[in-house]
Image (cartoon, rainbow, N blue to C red; front, side, top):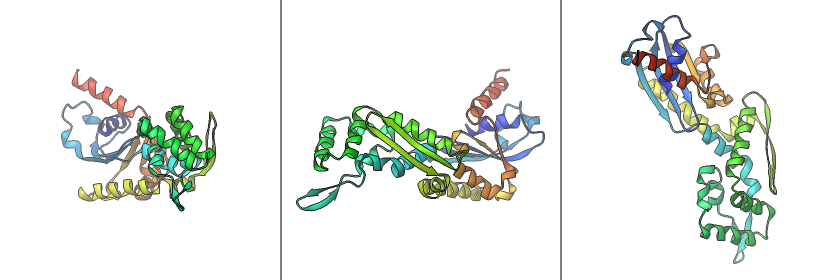
Length: 262
């Protein structure tokens, strides 16, 4: 996919360029180091232009999960306690880890887990925040709440403050989030992992950031400010280029097909 995106960018340059392609999506952050030259755009074999490629399984979905954990789970009872033989015990964190990814919410599908939810609802004194968790599961609202989280993340791509807002059934969430908190508290661990991977990726190829002439960024997560901060810190804003963040890969594949099937 990063190679396809690179072929899209190749249509925009006039001379050979050493390019780092950063394809930043929902599930992965993929990097490809290659030489682009519009004079070779129609060649069938571009393998000599490919210097290195790699990636890490961290992307926008991880940011969504982190945002849900930090700003959402409190509204569903995280850190609520109950008495167990005169000992104060917290409600199991496993419940809240499972709602931080809507795909994992099938954890609650069994009758055993539904009964467990009712048990802890009783133990927490029928707490309204724990009732929110039951509503979230029983009304199948996982996908909807992650759509709201995605919208919050999009707002933070071009604003200093956004509101994580979700109101369905009896659940009401209205959490202001600053870009500073998002960058330095909520997603900081994932951003650090991406940054460390990228620097090690270049080190293995004996490439210094100064050697890179252009960083072509594509994919929806390339719009996230902390991600852009990684590129700006190490390569400089002047080297950052982007195109159609959601269609560069598809366009590149289309360009390639005209070469293979001409």
